[in-house]
Each structure stands twice: as C-alpha cells, then as structure tokens.
Length: 85
Image (cartoon, rainbow, N blue to C red; front, side):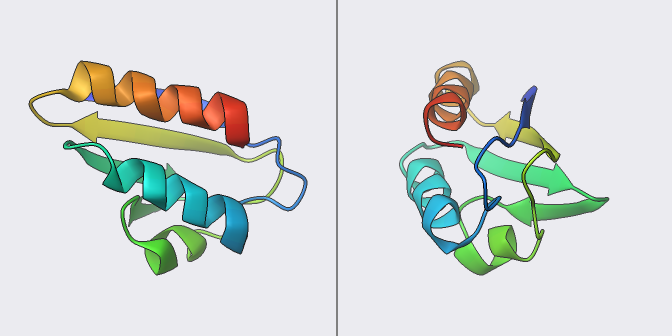
C-alpha cells in the first residue's frame, strides 16, 4: 500500500466538479484508491462517497493506493491532486 497526504487548495474544496475529476482519475487506475478526511473514509472511485467527506479548502486528505501497480497509480493520483486540487 502506498500513502500520501495532500492539502486541498481548491477554493470550494471537493465540491461536484473537482470531486468528479478525482473520481474519473481514480477510475482510470487499476489499484484501489481510498481517501480519508475528518475521521471518515471514502472509495475514491465513487462520487457520492467522495463528496460525503465534505472536504474544504485547507483540509488535508490521506490517500491510500493498494494494488499490483500501486507505485505508478499513487504517482498518477498525486500528480492529479497537485495539478487539479
């Protein structure tokens, strides 16, 4: 399992648009991707699960990537976060 943390810079947090983009990115990798924030966890491949975390600007999310290609998939997810969130 590969883990990383990311501080959300997006002004509105993970509202519908950025959450949808995050889910699309997560669905594009073969590994399981889980996001945790505020003591709750969400499957990053499910939009309502991600939006249910109510992540706001300045919150730090913990991302866990687990699978056969977790190294490459974790890099993909981290790059996405830096460029879009």
